[in-house]
Amino acid sequence: MTLASDSLPVSTKAEARALSEADLAVLRQAVANLERPSLAARLSAAAGAPLDMIGRALPAPVTDAVARSTEAAMRGALRVALATLPQGAVGSTLPAIGAEPQGRLARLFGSSDRSHKAMAALSGALGGAFGLATLAVELPVSTTLMLRSIAEIARREGEDLSDPANALACMQVFALGGRSGAETALNESGYFAVRAALAKTMAEAARYAGNRALLEEAAPALIRFSAQIAARFGIVVSQKVAAQAVPILGAVGGAAVNAAFMDHFQSTARAHFAIRRLERIYGQAAVRAAYEVEKAALAT
Image (cartoon, rainbow, N blue to C red):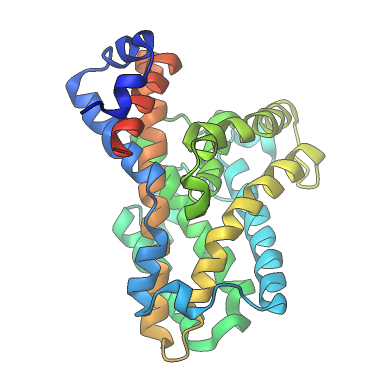
């Protein structure tokens, strides 16, 4: 039988073999996490019902509320992400997401994946108990918690979060984890395609963040970047809201939904920053070639 990877160019397969066996195993797991996201399954398990049974389309007022809350959450997350830059460069008093454990946010929420998930579950319990009315408050809280966890993962993978581009790469995770199942079935909507779609606005935002003595949240480059992230993040926020809309869900189920939400983005972040680490070692071309080989094998 001919495997899908057999149809790849010889040069691509040769570049893929440049990675060590250990790093290929890391990449293989990253490909599985990024190309077969399991958020819908996790949310369905937490809610106790398949999402397509809860409702294929949310009512227009709910959709509008999700869009507004998502945009607000991304603006808040962007402010926190920019606070990772050197204090003299941004003039911000917000706690840095990449700060050492003695930082204010770390002291409050802890610095492990488990503690971040526990705090997200607590905020989800409020959403499950009080419903959509709490979304405007609960979503920014859970998003900031996820960003803090994403930054911890980035630091473990060797990212210097004082670099504007690396700080904004933490924001990028919300878009990478926001692809729908239909999109992931299309090669052109895969991981590297999403990164490419975000590359221009991300570079513009990073240049603005790196060159200004005082950052203005309303800067056009930052608005465009935040909006682009929010558009994709809104996909999974809608899924989360649908799961939390189960009438019998309550606080316990709401906590489970938010824990699944956090777990999904932690998995996405681990995959994303593992790939970035490998790119620093082997170069982008070799890692991209190896990724395509593993992705083709995953599809067989």
